Length: 491
Image (cartoon, rainbow, N blue to C red; front, side, top):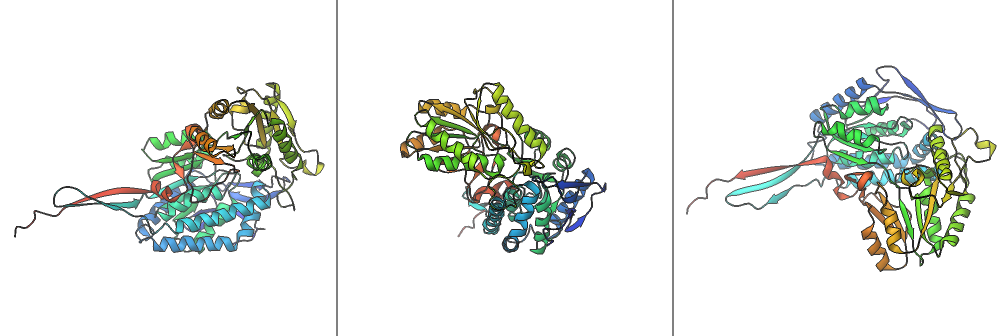
């Protein structure tokens, strides 16, 4: 395993590191300083095909798929242990690549370790069933791996959101080709090296950094691809689904959100304010399940809004590796500009900037992609700043008088990933949770999930689910076997 100071990364295909077929390399920079972090080989369609070939060959020729699952369980458990032993190196690499505070990166790597541990425990439990049928027959099912599965990961949680689908695919016996985001591929390549060290056969896990248009589409549109898992934007997701549908390849899509937080008059305002701050300013708001829309009862709006404003203004913003930093930069200048454009849209539509709304005044941060923690108030519901996913540290606040009004506003979006509500009343909690159009609802909690908890969205937030005991199901087909036992013998 290379050290954090390494500066050159290659593709990882067939258990070996190699430059791209074209020889193209990209320089990655620290989002906090603009300084170079590393260079990485940038894959092409030829590299995508080479990775698919290596994965297909490994699936057919290694014992990874045919073992009883115990070998896969041991390898994934060892991989978890190796990652845990190198957690600090991986966390620092993640921070330097994506910009998030080191504290958050450490939490991400710990979550990856737990995910690997969880799915290692399921690898030898991919079970079939027996089915009663008439006559002298024996009917049963077996669950078999699909073959080569393709995983296209985003840049906001580079390793966490990759392993979230890679782990169950491997546990079920598949081989994997992972395309990390072009901006943040470093921990994925480092992870593949650990997989080799853990005893995962060559070719079972392959990593090809590159563009979505070239590498991503080449992976999905190839007959060796038997499954696609994509986490990313709502614009790209339908294109992935279209390519996969041509060959009836199953897809799992997680495409973002515009999460509402409903705060009722009896809520614990101190706890709610802290959780709302975490839900929108964590990872600089670059989260698919960011709690980006606050719907607060009009009777408590001034008190809650003041608490949130003070939290936003009190956050220490700076480079992720600096002690005490609570919010880092956005991943790129393009992303920072995009976020600030939405703030201007909110202003022009009549909204008010309660706090933030620009770049930090600290001259030390001028070289980085920083945006102030921002709170907007009274932005019209039809504004793009309310309807569209901003993917930055921007909270839009509105008030309501009656619960039905809040629920209608919460559901008035094309997304449906995560929703949150705050109340001390159990009847309100359960009744409102049932009416919210979201794949996940948290009550009196910041956005929170666990490897054993299903992660899914409805409407424009995606298709299928990840995490939980049933997360292996999309990666293992059911085969039915019916055996006629012959005519019963007469005594």
